[in-house]
Length: 506
Image (cartoon, rainbow, N blue to C red):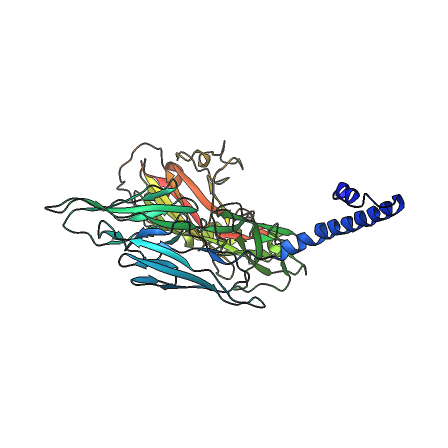
C-alpha cells in the first residue's frame, strides 16, 4: 500500500492500539488524497490551455529569403498579429518575415481578445539572418497556398542574362522550371529554390531554400441531381450529389435563393424530398454541401436541382390540350463540325399527327446526312414555365416504334436496335445523359454507314427526297426522366419533345 510501510516504521515505538488507529488514519488520509488527484487532476488538465507561442524550429536563414512565422496554442478565436524589431526586419500581415540584410529579428505574436478570453502575447523569438552568398532570392510576400491549387513563385536579384529556373524537392510538390508555377498534391511544405545560369563573367548561382506551406484545397465541382424531376404530390423524390472530393459528409437543404413551396421538406442526410401538404404543383429547389475532409475544404453545389410535385407525373392533365409540364427542344445539329439546316415539316405534322398525338410546342425537323459523318445533337430542356431544368436525367430514343425507320447505324451501339417489322412496338435504340447547369445536353454520334456524297435531289418540304421509306433513316426524340413523351394520345402525354428525322443520303 502506498505510504503503508513508511507509516508503520514511523510510529513503531508506540502502543499497538495507537499504532493501529494512527495507521488507519494515515491510510484513510492517503486514499482521500489519491481520490482527489484522480478526480480533480483531469478537470484541471482539461481546462488548461496550451501556451500561445511561436513554434518555428528553424531560426536561422539568409537575408532576402522570407520565412513564415507560425504559432500554436492560445484560447479563443482572436486575430493573430506580429511585431518584428531589429534593423532591416519587416513582417507582413501574412506572417512572412523578411530581412533585407544580415541581422537578428526579434519577433513576438499577439492573439487578440475574443469573448471572455483575454489577449495573449507570445515570448519573443529571435531569427538570425546571415548574409546570402548571392543576391538572387525568392521574393514572395505570402508563403501559404492550398493543396492542388497553382501558386506563383516569384524571384528577384541575380546578375547577367543567364536563364532563370525553379526547382522543388518536396515529395508532393511540382513546379514548372520556367514559369515558377508551384503546386502541392497534398497538405505540407514545399522547399523551393531559384537558380540563374552563368552568363559572361557572371557565375551560375542558386538562391537559399524557401519553404512554402500548403493547407486544405478546394474540392472538384459539386453537383446535385435527381433521377426524376417530377413526382406525385404524395411521393418521395430523391436528390444526390455528383463530383466533389474527399470523404466529407454531404448535407442537403432547400436553395433559399429560389422560390420554394412552403410544403417542401428535405431530409438533410438522405436527400429525400417530400411535399408535406400533398399539394399539386409545388416546386422545390434543392442544393447540397459537402463538408471538409483531409486535404479539402467544404464546398457547395454551384446550382440547385428542381423537384416538381404534380399530378401530371401520373399521366398528364387529362385535358384535350395535352398540357405538357416539361419540354425538350433541339437547339442545334452539326455534321462534321458544320451546322446543318433543317427541313421544318412542323406544319404538315400538325395536320398529320402532332395535333392529335403530341403537344403544340413540338417541331418536326428533318436533316440529311452523309455516311460516316460525326453528328452532334444539342438539346435544351425546360419546365412548363420556361425555366431550364439542370441536372435532369434524359434519354435519347431512336427508331421510334411504328415509324418503320431502318438502316442507320452508329458506333454508339445502344442506339441501333430497330423493330423487327413496321408494326412492332419494340425494341428501340437509346442513349442516356444528364443536362448541365443550364438545362442543355449534347449527344455526339458516330455514323457507321458507308460514305455517301451530297445528293442533287430536291430536299425541300415537298421535294423528292422527303419520302423516307426509300432511304435509310431514323426518328429521334428526347425523353426527360420517367415522363411519357409524345408517344400516345390523350392524358398519357405529359412531356413535349421535338421530333428529329435523320435521313441518310445514298
